[in-house]
Length: 330
Picture 1 (cartoon, rainbow, N blue to C red):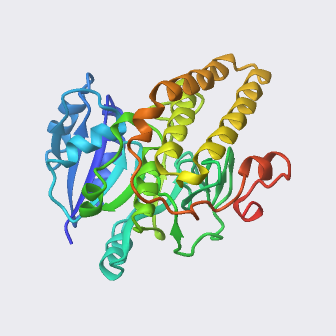
Picture 2: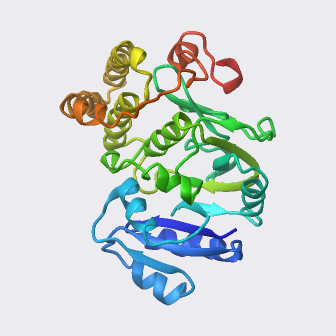
């Protein structure tokens, strides 16, 4: 099985110097690539001088996560793509359980490893933790992470299970599936495009799986800070785009209406916290959604599965019932 490890980079020279050595050392069975989104720092020079074994694909502009990978993967031939953030630290034998699962289970199309926090290695990391799900209104959560609450890894999620979405921080997908789904939606630019891709895969009856024996550590926020208003804008806007594309038709209007009401509460919650920029980011996200609703509605396919959610409302469970961990909200 031919595996291509592809690191998307934009002005991440320091991250490449820090994390590329372990990717090289612990990935002997894979072809290694960096897809560079027209960096203006020393990224290319660092790769050429320090890591000559890594192949470089140079995109013509900063295309973001979605289009950046779409463009790069046009030039890579492999059975499996391992899409890895530039701020991921891999561990010894991280690829072996993934390759074994793909080899032995032909029904599996997408895999996520266990993702722990680089800054506190006993904790799960925000972006993916031990595998992702969504609630009825499209709010994402993970085994090991609900909203801002991160659990300590005590082995409680060491079972390999089917999941709804895999984190884009370290995302494995069969190449034939990636191209059959036409890759990521480039209109997302960044954030939640992996959930959209996994939802489209789910509607096509592909299976995503969490494999705990593969472990990586994620810095998180290295390219866009967790507290950034831009991140808030992209997350809220893209979540509405994702719902528009993938919800069952009969549920489309009521779910999006209720989701936007919940977003309104979130906006005022930011205002009460003294974060007006995030308040306006949500308003801007809704405005952008109105402008682009029809173009995303046209992307709907002929079939959407009904039973897509793991919990009815994590907002209700978390803020009203104080369900702070995965086991308390499902």
